[in-house]
Image 1 (cartoon, one colour):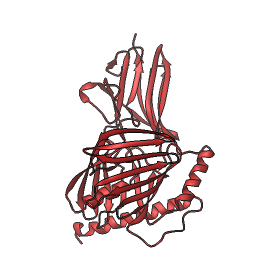
Image 2 (cartoon, one colour):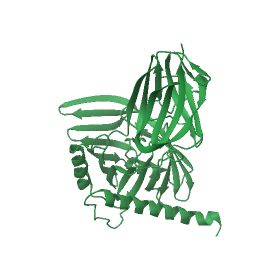
Image 3 (tube, helix red, strand yellow):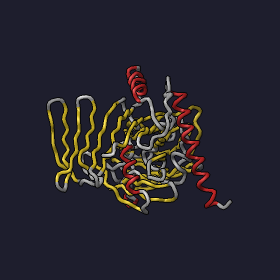
Image 4 (spheres, one colour):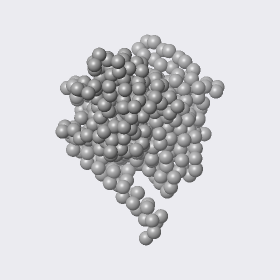
Length: 392
């Protein structure tokens, strides 16, 4: 059997295995797992989103004929539950979108060539206009039921640009067909997701492993969302909340009279393989999450042959199995995916060492040593070490 002929069988096997693993995980990790697994209904299903080994989101949704309705439990930073309704006209254009959580409701409606956003909290309503039009669909961070409509619109076409709106404006997403049952969705800033779809374009599985979110979304026929919400809220009450996807960490140290401060994002391991997998070898890494890693010193330092005057900088890395490279950049204030090579102060080799214990949260340590200081980037059982000295 030739490779092109064999490939669909491989992809189908991978998709089936992914679904089985997701359901086995949920059965093992969630008490009283759903016994529902009803007959497939293409117009009603659920999405289960994993971040590493943790269940992050569950979405129960249905196509209404005039749009979609969804009930969503999101666990970060603490558990929230929202209901959504999207109404479309016969041409598939937006007529009304509503998102409700307890006593707060957001309603979006097209008005001429813009979108009107009305947020009601208690007895107060605030209204504003944002860029967008009736062809746009909602973008809800970490929630994927609107992707189903986007993918179905793009089914059978080589490439489609679809606008997704938020309460601040509309972002262009690019959907491409890459093979039978395979599509990609490109987020404007986070990267490209691989998606498996059925013949109508309905989302079966989404892999965001090449983006900054690293989520896996799997379709199941249904899910006991009430029980899931209760268990998640009980975990919150017991101090076991999911927490932010990536909080901020800070290291402050005094080394040979220099006060050094490092501010960085702290992604979690969550039972994932990190270096060489989640963080690829030989590719530039933001070295944390979200906002770029910022490094500040009140004294001049030297990292090998690179002289660093007192001031603030951002740090990037290119990890590899032999250690890799630390990049010191003079641009500050940017997100971690923004990088301007013209602003580089210099590049420094890193040494890789193995840790005795697993570090769950990515951590940057500034350590005082006999020879000066060390910058240590620790995650999983790996540490990248960069020595420096204080000048003057």
